[in-house]
Length: 160
Image (cartoon, rainbow, N blue to C red; front, side, top):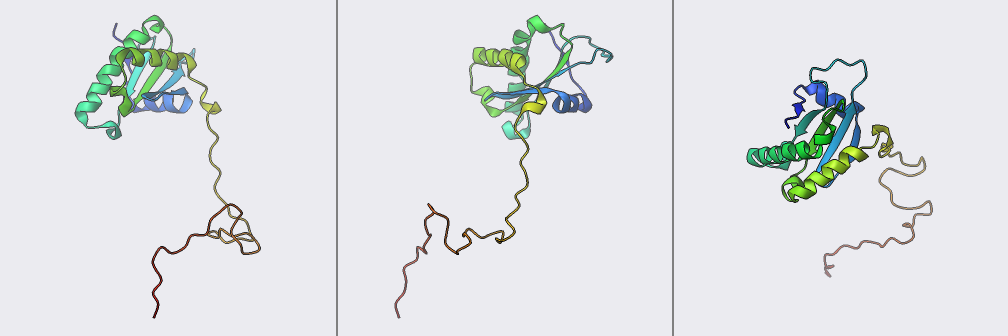
């Protein structure tokens, strides 16, 4: 079975922005369900694969995409009529794990993709206390915090 593909950048971005995510050691899956009134050329499931240059050279990226395409065809065969977009963002571990494990993780990923808003909370920007300087690691009395060791210069002292 050949799955329809995502071909345009805006389709990938929509899946990243509005979709649910699941992270695995080998890949990240982004699932975006289609709206009921959305017009789509292929009515069912569409697949997009991404392998950045961080995962390896062109040969490795193409091998990763071929493995993921076949694994997705097996894992998603029963869900081909589902109206959604699935983007798989590959990692270098995709080449290291066995094919059966890849298919199983992909099946689990589609089922467990959590809503995008329920992930980690964004980091708040660091603001030092008003009384301390930004680089100070000392308490108000001038001593280092409890449990921290004082770092000494490793150079031997020279005597005149």
